[in-house]
Image 1 (spheres, one colour):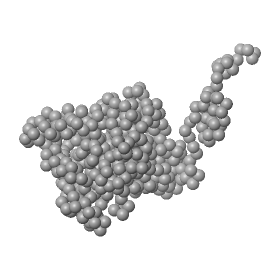
Image 2 (cartoon, one colour; image 1 turned 90 degrees about the horizontal axis):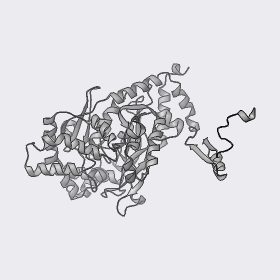
Image 3 (cartoon, helix red, strand yellow; image 1 turned 120 degrees about the vertical axis):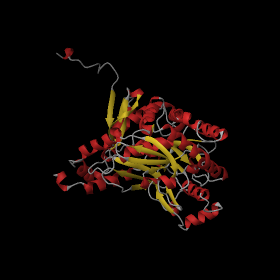
Image 4 (cartoon, helix red, strand yellow; image 1 turned 120 degrees about the horizontal axis):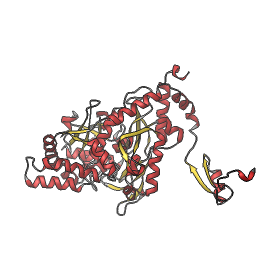
Length: 474
């Protein structure tokens, strides 16, 4: 009998309609005051359908991606030393590392040029900024991505032979990674500033901070950076734009051996003050820890997992586990967010830095739900943070076993970005980032949110399709 059918209140309550795809239906329903739950979905680009079908039919893909995820989450990350870059990386005089994919001086953005000019001045290879710029324009020096030497650099990421770097080890997979020491905020080299105060600070870091940190680490023994990252996610950091808890935990680990290091009380006090006052001090340790995680997934035939996302201020580039060292690049987008002082959108440079290695490894923007306080710094809100982390599960292979999000019932962070999922859904990885001034020498102008250009992923998909065995698609 009709009267006995349970209609779940369909005729007595207001309907809520779930929609997906083109917005025509959603718009029409909203015009009629109907509540709509709209899924963010769009069909894959038509010219990527054949490649998508070929790669998804590759019988190696599922097992290869599972292996990539297992290796990424199993990777260790111990801080074992602090050394000059020429010792640790074999960096020759006249060679400068930079963030992102390969780049020539002619195509370098303002902050990248500013950082390179500053590094040339710091190394004593030129007496003035004008002389350094002329030398760089004449190709007098070698420019090389940090990633090509298993290193990472925040923002411009410029590393010169004399700079000191952290050395981290993954004993599980026998890998090593490096990153420069963090300079703090404001007018700093990594944001493209190169004034006298920037160069003076770098010299102090070389003559005082680096040697004291080296003594502290060697006296203490290895520091488990992976454990610090796991804990900082429980304490409100996401590991890219917010590192407050991580920086304090690192200082707690190093303080006993730092204050007993062989140095003047004045130098030790200044090193402690500088480290303690810098809330991003830990970023330069979280980044190489994430690099070790992604290195563990490199070189797996058939895997569609992203192992690198990096930007040089001009191009955004990615690499995948199944395509080796090959870069897939497109023009970098410009972040949107909040600006410092009187700076505005016209002052911001396009996306720059190797720090997107944090998102590549499953933290940063992917763990934004763990850090609701960060949304005030990057221009979002708390629902956006929760929604972002939940959305990133749609484009990743699985969850991290060590990095967890308390507000999501301690669910593991979304880890191992799958190129096929990005192209199939149209959902791009979310990145939290700082913003460098467009003009060389400006420094930081703000912080915000950005996504990679979709073309990086469609290019990678095409290459993965070319590498897929024909027999695997039959």
